[in-house]
Length: 279
Image: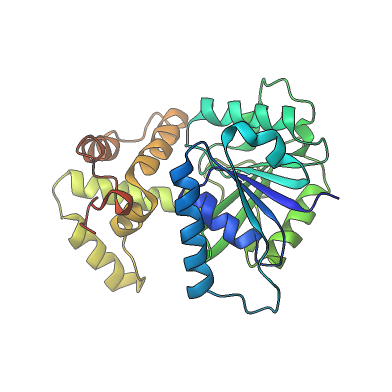
C-alpha cells in the first residue's frame, strides 16, 4: 500500500512540507543530497512540533531521511512525490523526468515551483505517465497554510480532487488554479507588488525600511515587501523575476539589477543573516 509522501529537497520548503504531511501519522520520506540539510530539517521539524503542535488528536508520522543515491528506495510506498529543488527550469525538468522514471506509475508527481507551470516542466520530456504530473505550490507552512493546485492540459481528472482533500486533511488551505497561470493566483498579484517595491527602492524614492513601513501602515499587514523577500530568499526572488521577464519583455530591469547586487554581496536574506535587513 502506498501511503508515504516523498519530498525531494530538504531546504526551507521541503522541511516545512515534511512537517505538514506527517501531521496525521503519515510516513514521510525526506530526500536530499546534503547530509547537513537533512540534519537541519529534522531539527526544524522538531521545532515546528513544539511551537505549532498537533491539535487534531493524531500521532506524528515517521519522517525518514534518504540521500540522493537512495531515491529509488525513498520512492517505494509513496502515493505522492513532491520536488522542492532550486527554481531552475533545467533542474526541475531533470528531476521531474527522474521521478517519472523511478516512481510507481500510480504515484502522483508534483512540483512546488513558484513560477514554472507543470506544463512547462513536462513539455518535450519522454515521460511514462505525464498525466500524473501536477503543480502543488505551497507558501510558508505551517504559519501560512495556503497551497495552490494546478494541473496541465492532460492531468488526470481525479488527481485534483484527491489533492484538494488530502491537503485539507493535513492542515493546508488548498486552492484550485483552474487555468494554466504563471505565478498561480497569489504570486501573480504579489509579483507586481514586490517588483514595484524594488523599483521604488532602486530609483532612490525611498529605502526598503521606509517602503515596508508605509506598506504596513496602510494595509495593516505584519510584514512589508522587503521583509517578505528576505524571508523567502533573495536568490529565489530573483530566479522567479527572471522567469517572469522571459515571459514578459516589457518588465523593467531595475528590480532584477537590485536583487543581483544584493546576491553578489552575499546578502540573501534571513538564511545568510542579512538581506535588506540584518538578522
